[in-house]
Length: 225
Image 1 (cartoon, rainbow, N blue to C red):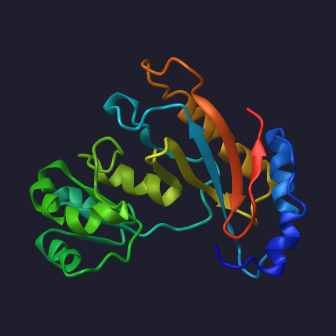
Image 2: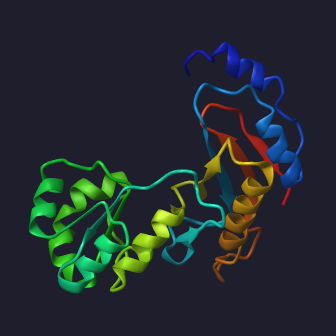
């Protein structure tokens, strides 16, 4: 592990030893020494799922009530009226074969890729480029949809995707350090409640084993749930 900065070590000294109620946890996070840029705030959930079981994969997306403090760059594979609607909804780029070639050649300067169902024959071969970057459109994540305009609007409004990792953990962006505490708390509550409601029937033990919040360059704060 690399050497920690003086600022990080100072923040580490302020790290609460115990779990805190959400409001207090957010306040503790905001008391860490600030950086020169507006850090992204993330929530991390440790779940009691077996990621090797297909019916225990936790994956989805949610529009957070207060957005994420970032305008996401959205590209869309669509044609005809759907393409026109996507452009009107604010998509940064809309295309078909031309967009596919651009991505195949290595262009991935975007945050979200959405595709109409009739475009998946074109998008499928791009899996080698999009998959490793978490950009591959998926019906389960809601990014393969006949209503591309609606989904473009959702991502522009602050929609986030999530999927458990190999350790059964879920991570997501929930805002910026510049957000006031109430807005951060509302976003975190919305996300945790959403994931809580996705508990698979096959999970018999404790589902949510731990919740923590952190910022881009700060220690974490554990949250009592």
